Length: 67
Image (cartoon, rainbow, N blue to C red; front, side, top):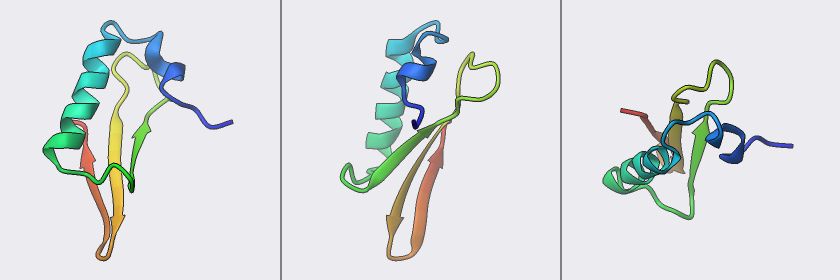
């Protein structure tokens, strides 16, 4: 089974703000919602898990690390 957001929500002090940050980055960098994938780190302490947004395109993979 693949991990998902529910695997880290219980570790977050402010889950709503965490998701808001992901959505904000997604919109700010104009990722295509049909092609982009958001990867969330589930190893480590999980205090503020990193996320990575990536999208395949004709030139390879566009990505954005969490600010």
